[in-house]
Image 1 (spheres, rainbow, N blue to C red):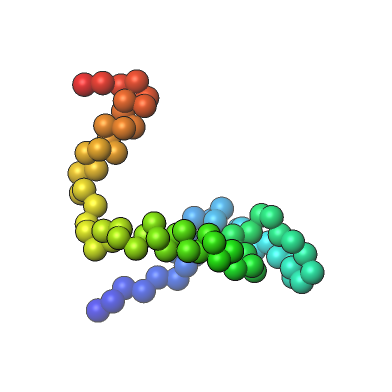
Image 2 (image 1 turned 60 degrees about the vertical axis):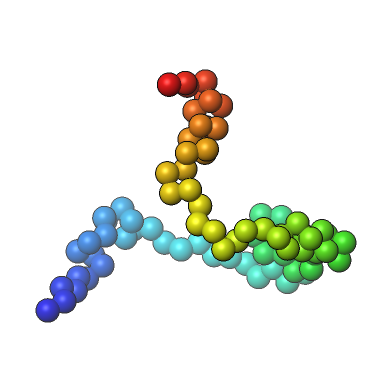
Amino acid sequence: MPNFYHPAQIIRPEILALSAYHVPLATGMIKLDAMENPYPLPLVLRDEIAQLTANAPVNRYPDASATQLKINVTSGLGYFR
């Protein structure tokens, strides 16, 4: 039998006390702090991205142990084994 909880039973009181902030409508505004962009990419840039990604091996799994990433991060921080 599933065990259902009321949010107050599993969420800390300080989190429950938070309230949402108001986001005003952006009509007629240029928002530089948002991740959306109402303008399409220029065709030249779209073509360049298409060329760069056309032969990318996107059907491959990344290195599960992240060996090269670990080497780059540790050497960048000056830590060597």
